[in-house]
Image 1 (tube, rainbow, N blue to C red):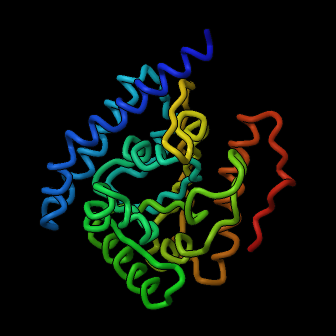
Image 2: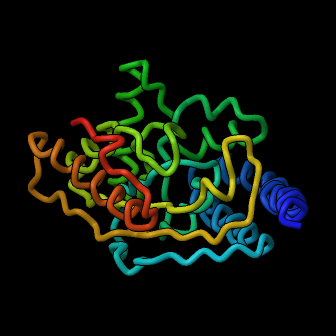
Length: 252
């Protein structure tokens, strides 16, 4: 019986994810066509996420949304274990925002062109691309847009374990003097894997207290990076009793 439930939900969950996306795709491309329309994409991403979780009958409590600074741009740092993380973060962040992601996302059929116009793409192998992306993100923060970064650099490792954090998010937050908001996505990897296969599982998101960067300098970057890593890892360890914190250590 369980096998048939998983099989049928896999089909239903996939449809719940892709059908709203295809319906919204023309509007997403339209919102991407002009910079002044970009904020509408955030609302569409929110609607896409809501429809997916509603139609999939997946509970998704978001704990700690009151921790989000009101009316202030922030750098949101979340762990990354599933394609679902992208739309799930649209339920967390309030106001307009941009993702900062790998330029390889631009090659994803249907999704990539639109995503690359709306958000900030970076080729981490290129110093020039990394600098351009950094300056774009800094300007977005200056204009009041938040930045969402998965500091692991992509879907890597062995869920729920964290991979080592890259330092871009923390350098950005310090230079822009905006808060880091750590976010732990606890269960998305159980709902949707790297191959877009879906399964029913009650998900949960935790938004942690913001970490102020006022007055911090580049000398404080490693400590900020470690504090963010520890915050997310502690939530994972509490949620998963078998989590071995010594298995993967952050190296800064």
